[in-house]
Length: 84
Length: 425
Image (cartoon, rainbow over all chains, first blue to last red; front, side, top):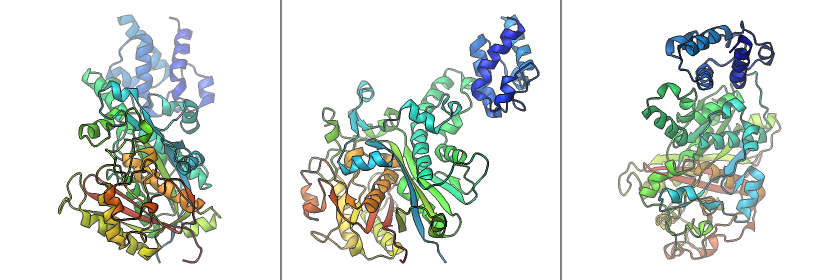
């Protein structure tokens, strides 16, 4: 899966939770889930569950804590996919 | 100086009507909201009938965001928020996304919250999937879920809380909000209560054999308060909401005033002298009614209509006797008496609120709704009051003062007096 495809899948996953449309439209690797997309921090666990379902991976608590931006999410997904 | 408290908004989600217009039409015409539910039958319930409000997906989307509806499975919160927001808007108040209103709060009761969501969570949890519960299990299953949702939707900045006193919850919530405004602690209180629907809430009652098993083939005839053939209550669900407001605030806003909350009383029989977890201490019930009348500072003879608790169990004649003793009125001098439960079943924690909404509608519109399925009035009731005190077809009638009471498990009682609004009281 290339970077653009991965960003597109992530974009679909976070869509229900975002509260800043403009930041969402311009979503890129540097987008932060909380500061830019204004996702409620409680919803981050839902984003992670949806990522797990989409990619059929399991994200442990440690990785979860780091998953605060598109870039970190991509890195974690790629690592977990590689481990499969 | 104590504040006068008036009702400026109403909302209702009932098995026989959602929204004030539909509900008014339903109670006026004796429309039953009780249906047969295959799900109850499939689970071997003795009583397979119940009252569940009809809410479409489109209706849900008018009140909740897509995000709020994601993994949402709490029918009580759904009903409570619809009724609560309707009452708020009905009072002419706006929904403001930016500001907090520190003068407005809510006391919105329930018995238990999100039982279906809780069930989902328990299955996942027992499957060692606690990490996959998602973020909303707490908000949907905490008792105060409904007041928390409403507080956020409306930006309430005064007290935001949930009360719980079994089947007297709704009437108690009204009195708690009333006290708060009366004492100058809030200008507006959204008060009411809600109850989940379905087997996981109703099962415990079915197990106690207190719900009727005789009307699975004739659901609309199942709820028979005050009748000789009453054979247990029919479970219901939904929510009722009232926007209570200080008279000053209501006049200042030029709001429509439905009526006035004159006063009331809340007590318990202490599960003594005949009172138990499930049965009322008659002395306490009578005392609650007498105290409510004293608190409202009215004469018992001025009560035009009683909206009773009257669930359609064998205890209905006892309730009538308590009213007779407390009011010192009987036979032909007894006020009109009705049971809204004949049409919607016993909506448990939501009962007091939905039935109070029904009472206020009748006060405002000037009619008495029928008590259906009461063609064979119980002989013990007829020893106490005249048969024509129970209305079978609605009548137009100017009403000035209505007494509403609710009683609940734990031997708890609540009684409130609603009066037609007059500027000089």
